[in-house]
Image (tube, rainbow, N blue to C red; front, side, top):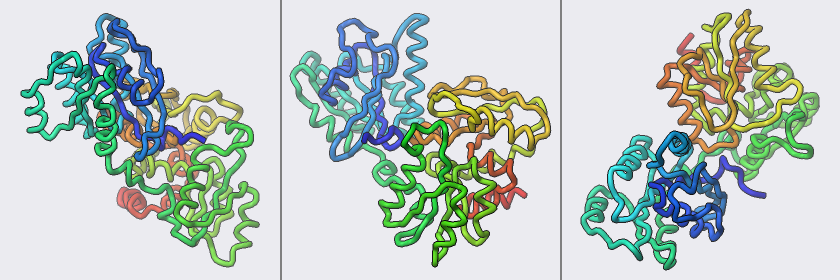
Amino acid sequence: MRAPKSFRLHIGIFGKRNAGKSSILNALTHQDVSIVSEVAGTTTDPVEKPMELLPLGPVLFIDTAGIDDVGALGEKRIAKTLAVFDRTDLGVIVSNYNDWGNYEQKLMEELKDRAIPFVIVFNKIDIFEENILINEQLNANKIKFVQTSVLKETGLLDLRQLLLTSAPADYINRPSILADLVGAGEAAILVVPIDKEAPKGRLILPQVQSIRDLLDNDSFCMVVKERELREALSRFNKPPKLVITDSQAFLKVAADTPPQIPLTSFSILFARYQGDLSELVRGAMTIDHLKSGDKVLIAEACSHHPIGEDIGTVKIPRWLTQYVGGKLQIDSTRGHDFPPNLAEYKLIIHCGACMWNRREMLSRIMKARQAGVPITNYGLTIAYSLGIFERALQPFPAALEVYKNSN
């Protein structure tokens, strides 16, 4: 089974049109992933290629359109390329010595401003002579670069090595989802209602990832449906360290879980794992300030066809409306596109972003902050609306302190 995108190091490939970005990607993956042509602007939309880059592990290469594209269509392509920065963990700037200039400098500045590590590839070294002055300038600024020729198949192993050594440390030392809350040799109960929108015969991704995280850290786990929780708890001669539930079953699970046993939801775990839990807690507390007629944005990372009592389009709007006591204007967005008019909204409610890497979720939190709009996520919204917010934050002392200090 392939590693999900959220577990992959996202490597964005940037540069001018016809710099050789697609050729570099095809050479690294040993496949014709992107169309290669002498005609500038062949790549129109970002092209993704998942692969195993040993010994680093699972990565996702993203080939982008040239940042110097022209015309009305070119502007749209550039916008798509710029959006890739939001989910890039490691940047690759492709150029050649004859073409190095302001465009590449702007790319470096953008990556530096976002604190994204990057490397430079001087491609087509078989055609363009090495420029010692550029090399000295890059070395003086401690910027890593490599020289390649896809045609001659030179420098590609050096590029692979450079990618390995430039990967961000927080990817290599990825934090756990919940094992640190449970501990080796201890147990957790996972309450998993059967979701109609989950594919037949499978659990949804946060549940699978949580189980694997516990197993990797030598913890025990029991998986039950919500109506089986009381019976499961009665079979423990030692209380579990944590109960985790799907947010939609929060009220029943909270009623069935003794108060001395910590309780939270998968979505709140992912608020910590994929985002900034304290910031999202602050966002949830602004629900108290919503009033009838306010605009709220509900954002989901992946696209799916809503079925029945869909959490994002039906349940959360209903719970929010009941809590506020008036009708809200609720808009929805899905996928990587984020509306530019964020300032119009009083609150942004995001899914757990289990399909994304952490950088993209943090980028969304930053955009919301820049627009002056609070942001929270599904699990925190549900817990707040149902009056069990403090209980759901018990496993997270720092986030709980944020909540208590605001009251």
